[in-house]
Image (cartoon, rainbow, N blue to C red; front, side):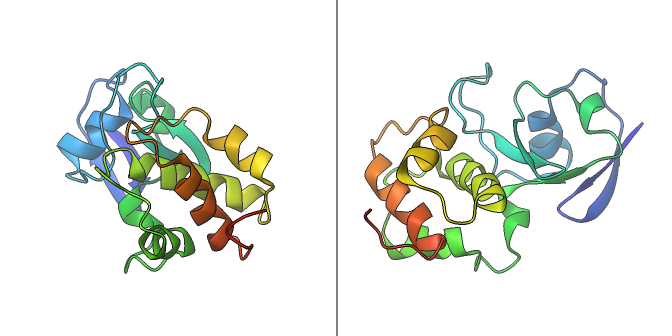
Length: 153
């Protein structure tokens, strides 16, 4: 049995310690906002926060999350009013939307460390998040809006 806190709620799961955190969150806890993309930490669709740090849930074993705090897209804001979520909607960022929870979670980790990031810092922070629809300019603009900056530098 492994204990962890997901979105502020304590959970005890009966899982192999090597089971990826992604499958624990999705299959055992039932939070499906975090997506499976590549399974190799290359695409960013599975990004969650582990004690506030952005991690790839597809390659993070549940043993690494034991006794720690996990935040998924569902836990970023109970009512969807996180500044990033609001900016995403305001600017119509997603097309297919599949990568967006990972994009938002990576951006949230950036803003927690750097509240007023430059375009270069945004691009560097989100470089590991792939958007097949190519909405990168809208993603950057939404991060800037969420940070209280103008859409364009």
